[in-house]
Image 1 (cartoon, rainbow, N blue to C red):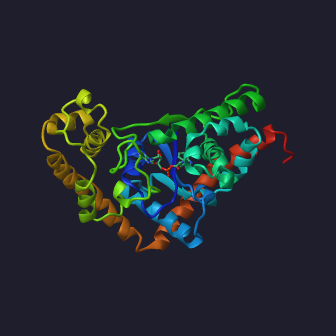
Image 2: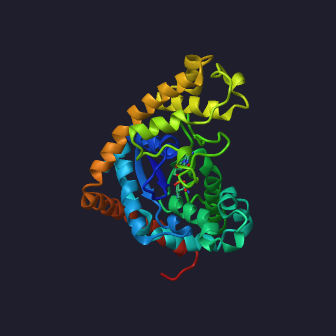
Image 3: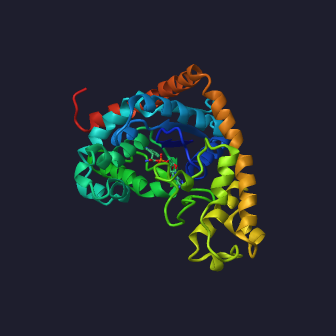
Length: 335
Ligand code: TYM
């Protein structure tokens, strides 16, 4: 049986990239029915940068509501907060002591996030990928559905697993090698203002992203104002080359219509961008606003969300603790 594990950082504002690159695929994998699915909200990762405690609690609930509104069914999948499962931080320390700093120095996300102020960045921001490896390996996850930007972190998790297996498990497969699942048409959704930058919840301009909490007018306005180029909509991959903004809109249309960027090119190629933008607005509104309404509805009953998180955490604790206990034994700890 497959064990699927994936996580997101808590935020009140999940964006379209989170949905198309990850969340939607989580639901597909859950509905395939042949796997056990665990979907975490990684609140411990959220404190690697300055945070507001009250906002964190709300953001965690809000992320849980977004998961459910998008189709994660708490009866089929476990939804939990990372902080409610001690095994994550416990395992992180064990892994920290066997992960060479050289491996972490290669992580591009740290370089991007710390920027020029590397010395002021927290130790947690630097060691973030080790906690992520713990998130995955404590569950012996077989598959990890993520967007393209998490590939390097997944490779680090695999390196840590292989290193542990070799040094402490005599070459046996104690830790399952997790496979990244980077699926669907939009594995890397780009900013609406700059087709060479990833769409992200932390980008300064709200116009660069579509949030799952945006209303219909806001979505339409953002798409209307999205950057394009002076040409007509490209009709094929060759024509789209060097035109990242055009390719991004076509890819989003392809993903939201369950087809492909090529199919969007066949449909809109040669026409003005306004035609594509109008169609994309209608489609995005049709696909996203029901999720927003459901999410708002769920958030009127925080106790129900908390109960779902409590149940998910109970399951996650039961699944992860034996692996941590066994890991400690293999590393020579007394208990
Ligand atoms: P996070 O919270 O930044 O993003 C959550 C998921 O959304 C995907 N994603 C995107 N996909 C396509 N296009 C985009 N523009 C885009 N932006 C975000 C991400 O790839 C991710 O799948 N480190 C992780 C969270 C994490 C995790 C884990 C994931 C912690 N532990 C264990 C999987 C397994 C992160 O910050 O994702």
